[in-house]
Image 1 (cartoon, one colour):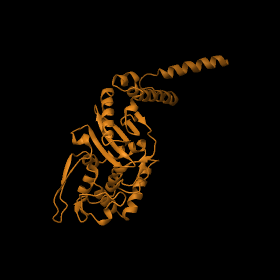
Image 2: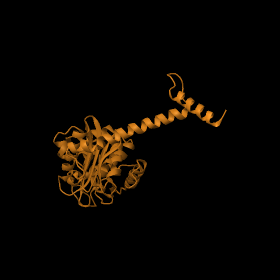
Image 3: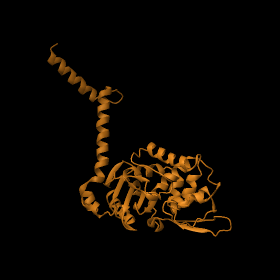
Image 4: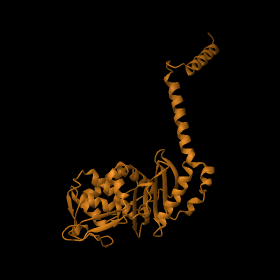
Length: 313
């Protein structure tokens, strides 16, 4: 048989394999190629849909829309498809202030301490970075549940400090665990020096923090406590009960699309917020860092939310 006849026979056999009826196995190479093509097509469709310029433009988003966002760094990701919906200086390393408390909560819960056990506030829990005050006075006693609750919901610094001190090996071991968890999550540009975020040396990027939001969202208590609107705690020792409210104005206003959040502010960081919200049933993570004004970070989230609710239908 001539070489041309061999080639013709090979092509015919390949065509028959490609048309193999149900129940007949195709060669592995053909199946792998078709699967790869199908996967690539589905990924392209998933990634292309939210980015359609016509669709986003109809929703008020243009190539210049990012300029309307006041924050220095922004990162928005569709958690279902891992599509980046928009970003702005997402890899800029910046102080993250009390957004750090999300990692404090993760490490605290991973330690598997008895959450109903009492925890005292000591002199060591005072703020020696910014010398801020606290309504949670030295000598107050709350359960770890309450400490975690007000640290996440109201960004109570002494509660976060007490949680970081109450760890095998003390606070240095806790901070080491925070950094180890960051490396485990792939947060390559993130570093922690304390559990409160009051130090400007707690740094990360907007992209890195989306990984922390995704990880923290797997903890039911973090979701519940960070989005609770208010909580009353009894610090004991004859002290008056303390009423706390959520530090996030959107949650206080009743926005139930938010399923996890954490705010943060120090002068070096500006106003920061991370949010996971559900947009038409799909989870979307929003990270906003370095907003200049006291409400600019919330305004940025509101603007992004409007774009998302219009485009992700």
